[in-house]
Picture 1 (cartoon, rainbow, N blue to C red):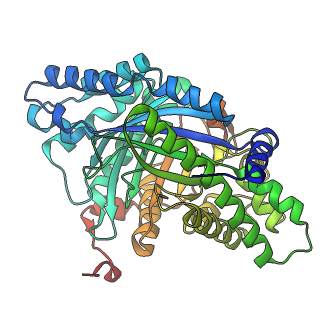
Picture 2 (cartoon, rainbow, N blue to C red; picture 1 turned 90 degrees about the vertical axis):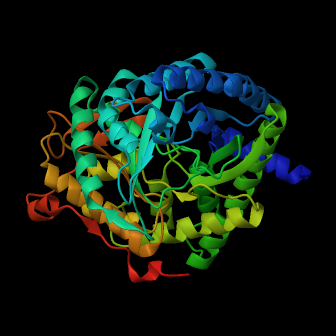
Length: 454
């Protein structure tokens, strides 16, 4: 891959003035050969293999950042779903495996490790059941471990029994981490149509079709897109705005692929994908909300927000696909409410509601992300919120997710400060009506007609 002098100068400007960064280099490690009838032996194998493959990740990422002048913010590891590793042991608690993952992640110096994961969209194995029961304790007892579960797919429908169980463990996790505002739930996400090469937490893990090790890169550039639209000015029509977003995403993707391929070369592994997701931070100028307002809405959450987000997401995907044949992951626009300064402000001003966020999730990259609700929200209400979001993904054959934090002791409109990347949340009002009978019925929502494509 070669670069012109103009591209190099543009990249320098994007890094220095427009907060362009490589948000994460995520090393995927296949752990299937770590399965063992003895849980302690399995833990030792998991720890040893993560150390073996991950020991040079941080050093390599830092050397690439220094050599190319592009910040690499996070270094992460994603592993095979742990429920697949735990099966032979028959263990009832998988917390020791989570602790082995956490210890290995600390030893190699990565920010997070994802993969305390189970796929239960059609039912539970014994290991899946053990992993579900272990999630609250595992997330409370570890710092770097992230957990994700698949509760549905377009092909299989929605496992409502699993949704109800997820609600229970979500509330348990919030209670166990209430001293930190329920922060354990920020490391826990449920999916419809999960992506098996996603480099972003909390959903990062690698599927069974992935190689022994693989580098997946996540690139983020909301500030770059914002600046490009600002330079375009208010007189440009929507097609011109769309084109400038697409061209900007092309440039961002080129940077991500350069970093990913170089990291793979230096680590002696495979380059997987570059995930071109506009992932915001609470920092000034790094907001998806700012972009939506530049496109033309008075305040994020106002009428017009969903169409602006749809246009932004599609332009990012097309720009990425033009730049690389290895675009994957989620790729589009993230709307994690607590992690975006503009979204935080819009929620504080009551422009952005839970209902509007659900509508926006139909066209964004993920779904309801980093949403705070009152800690005393009834379980049936949480089940309904999750199931609604999964239904959007199921019917539209897209990935949707829910990363929700029931904040103990907080009510609608109150603020919870988590600091750092996780930012500030305004607790959303889930409403006074619920779905108790739906929650109690259980069972399965069948796959939609559009799932029959063979």
